[in-house]
Image 1: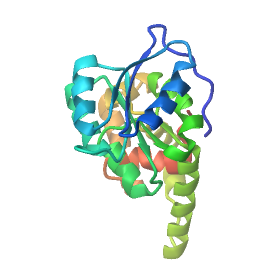
Image 2: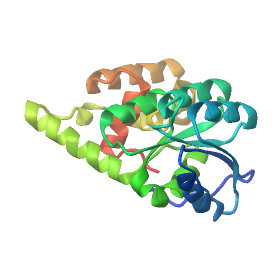
Image 3: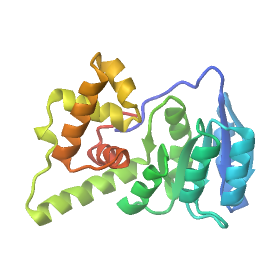
Image 4: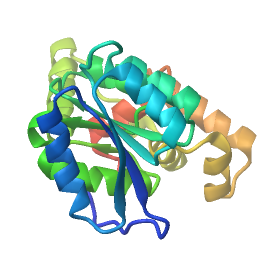
Length: 226
């Protein structure tokens, strides 16, 4: 789904920009600084500096290029999650294939943007992720869906999504937004153990093995509303 308009948190959004090219950082800064309520608190030119500044500045969001020197963006994202757990990571990348996206999600990224559309996608991404959602460049969802359909046709199999119960679809949606089992249970008014059972059943039906794969599946199927 294409992103809906989102309002900024009352406390504002503190953003760290990490890219080894100063001209790219300048462009990202220009895009975000045009929006009231967003503050650029720091810039980093390599992965290690990114981790150090996140530990020091505790930004709301870190926008991290996937291909940086000293420590790549995926590994930097993993370390940011340890030194600043409340910082949400957006990965910038030139790669749209599933392998890179899954690695980014496994590292804890909440957003994945293609660099050639970052100028258009960055601001909606920051707003969505600050609001507790995930965000992926629309072109990624389109590519993943086409690849998935091709995969199913080549093997003569069908997507199992329609095998899910309505409740399992609700649980899938909320898990794909990054909700914990406890949060899902609270939102749906069911027990945590019941939520865990629904989670186990839907993962088995869809042949998914991790939270990262759940999110990737939801992006592929365009069932994450942003």
